[in-house]
Length: 177
Image (cartoon, rainbow, N blue to C red):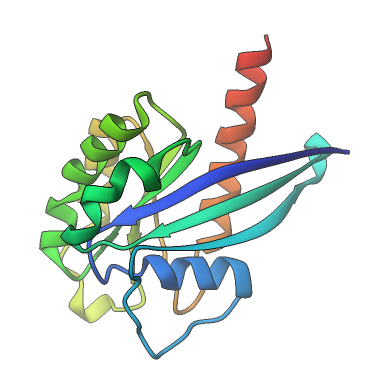
């Protein structure tokens, strides 16, 4: 069994559900009492890729979306090996900010890393403002994968991390060749 540990960052605007996505993945629960992330929140979770005989430990940095934390971006983003860029499907401004988050990530990491664009809160169907096709189009433009999730119901949360993990492992195998 191969054991690998990688730093993953979750970025996006304020209140898009980054912490909820993280809690859904790590603890399989949704916390209703929202508390804004001040700076960074770090959690780890092991994920077994049986077909590859590999255990990947995600060391996940949930980075606060408020602008005041962006002056510390280099410290938070440093040595990130993969990322989830999250927006809220019910808030247009969070979707419009994705390109800025992507650009900030590229500047602070210095090279392209495995990434997935995540449209969160699909359980709020009545409040949807961004269509799935808009998310897919933006992901194609950025040349990254796209998924819609619900941290509340758990929909596609594990799949997002599984797909991100596969991208990380593919990157490692390409480097070793």
